[in-house]
Each structure stands twice: as structure tokens, then as C-alpha cells.
Length: 312
Picture 1 (cartoon, rainbow, N blue to C red):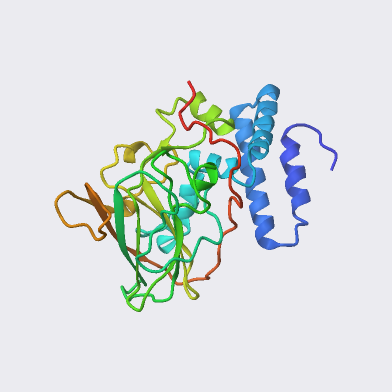
Picture 2: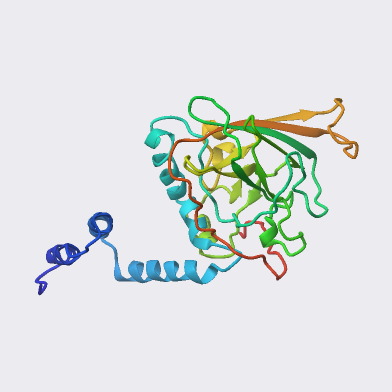
């Protein structure tokens, strides 16, 4: 089709997409073109703004590598990750859910760890945390033999893949639920941390004047069991002051956990001194296809860790 004016551009592109053989791909591409062209018209996008947008997308890819995924970070900063998650879980967005976004720091092949074992694999400061969790189905019945990946950042605000000073797979572990659907582990109390801002995501956060680039303290979980949809979750510390202003829009009411401080009680381990914490949570899985997501990262940083502070 030879285009006569701007009004015919969208018509020509949509006509060409009608040849797409896969029905779902055809639907997605058609909707994307309609909304994208509509946005350009409504915004009256200038040529300079178009070139800036293209450069921003290129920079997202250039900033991503084996130990960092800037694209996933940007999706979270726009609330896209959270929206996609909530639309696809909890009876398609109709009910509360334990599900949350995957985030940019999950790695495959976390060390298999016995129930109750520690995921602290190198000296890491912070109050001891003892977690006892349960996995159930929609009726509340326990799910045994589910594989559970656990990961979190250090108290310095860095996941081990970002920090060459941490042991490989520090604060990561893989567990299996017992006959009662339970799993337990030892770690440290998670701390709130800043997302990396040395790339285009940081430029965006500063440009739109977000109050900070921090996430509230949380622990990540990925639970896999054939017959159930793989459950990806983040459970937040209930008294964290950043719950209302999470830079990644990930906090829902159902994901605020029960982290309890103990000052005078005898700790579960003899080597613990000072205050310690306990944590409990019940994860509910939905029926569905069990499959693992594509890991956002595959390796560990080998250079000096970047300062997590928000650049002014």
C-alpha cells in the first residue's frame, strides 16, 4: 500500500500484520500497533523525542549483561511487572495472591539446602532470621515435595551477583517441602536496598522526581511443583518505612509478612547473640502449568560493586 498521509500509516501497518500466521502473535502485534500509534498521535511526539526514546531503549540493552538486567528493572519502575503479575494470578486478578514479580536478580541452580539449613554462605552482618513457611493448595491442603528457591540481598543492599566480595550464591538456597508442606531456613533479616541507578533507569527515576530509588526489605521465593502454576513471590518486612513508596511498585497487602523481633527469648541456635527474628508465611499455589521463567541473569559480577546510593 502506497501511503497518502499520516492517517494511512496505521492502516497500512495493520493490513500487513494480518498475514501473521500465529493467532495470538497477530492479536498482540495488532493491539500494540493500535495503542502505540494512538499514543504517538495523542502525545504529538516530536522527531527529537522519538530519537531520544530510541536511544533510551538501546541503552537499556547495552546496560544489561550476565549479572544485571536493566530491561526488567525498567519494567518494574513503570509498574509493568507488578501489573502483569496481578493480572495473571489470584484467579486472573480477582482475588488476593501470594504471587509477585520475579525481579532482575533470580539465578538458576541455587545450592540445594536441607530444611532448616542456612543460606548465609559468607560472613554477612545482620540480625539472625529463622523462617518457617508452608505451601498449600487452594483448599488449604499441604503441598509436599515442592521445590522452593529463596534469595535476598545483603544488609549492604547488594545481591551476591552484584558483589564480588560475597561468596557465590550467598543468601540463596533451594529447599523441598516436607509431607506437611513445610520448609524452613536460617538467614539474616533483610534490609531495604536501592536499585541500581548508574544507567538509563536511574536517569528516568531522577527525571520524574521519584522520592528515592529504594525497595522495602523483602525475601524472594520461587516455588515449583508439577500440577501447579509456578509461584513467584516477595514477602516484605511489616514495619519497613518504604512500603508505601516502593520504587518498583511491588508491595501488595497480601505480601506483607510477619517478621517478629525477639529480644529476651532463647534463640534457636547457640551462636546467636543479641536480638533475632522469626518469620512465618503460608504460600497458596494455584493449579496450572509448572514451568520455570527465563533467568534474568546468569552470572556473578567480577568487578568492584557499584555504590548503591542515588546520584544527585
